[in-house]
Amino acid sequence: MAMACVSCSGSSSAPAKKEAAAAAVAPAIPADIQAAADTALGADTDVLAFGDLAKNGHQQILAVNRVKSTPETAIAGIAAMRVAVIENEGSAWKEIFRCDGHLKNAHGFMGGTPLSPVGGWRLQYEQNAQKGLQMYFTPIAKPVGGYIQTIGVRWNPQVKRYQSLDRNYDQFLGEVPALDAPQSQLHE
Image (cartoon, rainbow, N blue to C red; front, side, top):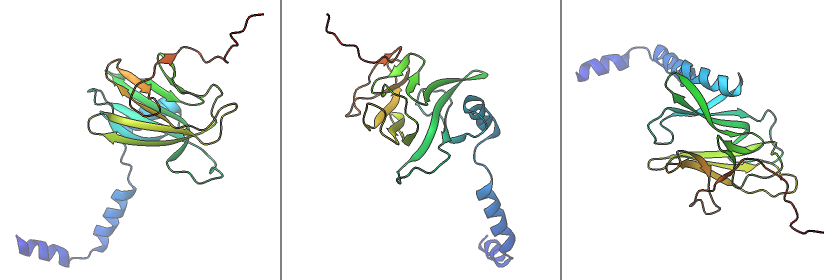
């Protein structure tokens, strides 16, 4: 057995290097996963992660449309215009989370979302073995009338959807159906 390995290593390594380089260049994303992401966000979509992201037994995809131009200041993470998590429900894919100008799920706008639309987000994410996909969104530029704050988003197993987290990233925040400018409580 050891001789076979020695004789294999003695053969030309150029074809092996070419095969390894071709494997590194080959897409790691299955065609059906990429097609589902393209359907959700368009043809210029990058799949960042897929699998049981929420630890809920369902196949999900985390996909982004990256910012076309480089932000003026260097940022950690992925500069994105839009982000979506889509979930496979039988034979169809359904969007269950979206980040474009705001952070949203099927129940509305997530807590902590700026009132003014955000033109681009910095996305950082990690896959936690117990909690599943954890995403952190920071506006690339200061929103009109607001300030730059990082918003954490994670799957809430109690309500079975992605929700934003409080500033300590411990408690889930609810959603609101619409974003309205604050109204004065003073009566004339």
